[in-house]
Length: 199
Image 1 (tube, helix red, strand yellow):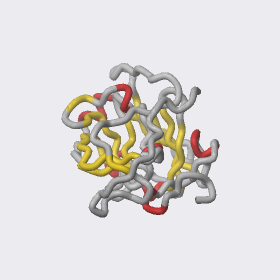
Image 2 (image 1 turned 90 degrees about the horizontal axis):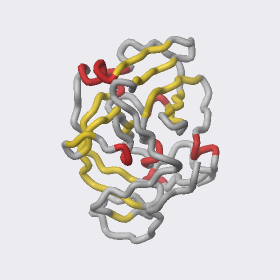
Image 3 (image 1 turned 180 degrees about the vertical axis):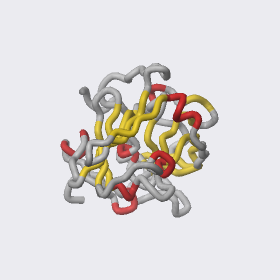
């Protein structure tokens, strides 16, 4: 994969208490990617949850669209220091996808079309904290922003909201993903400025 394409800037503005430390507000939607943008046809798309007991739960695009949809409005915070307020999404809560998943795992490794991975504690994907989103601002999610579907976990830095998501593997032990292996923080709380390992 290549280097970050753009977006490493460093202005800081007042965010009325909504800006985590070290962040500045943007009104556009910067695009930062490592490597080429995957193009996935919806009739070829699928999403899987693989448990630690080697059980696989699988959804096609049509099956995802048939599930109850939610429309969260959330602030998002990129580790490159930009924050965007009141972003509007549409997608399926991870709570819905995990309804029939039996697991005692504590960790999740999210994987994407194109090979990207990122790790999270499973509890950070449940209880209304995360969605598989396919629409942004009322429109189909563009490929440069992770379309046709991406993970959205707004309480963590946005690299945890994997673009072009294709599945989750449940693990008994934490396993670092793409950026975490390169020195980024394993958790990524923007309010604690957990940008890099050791922060």
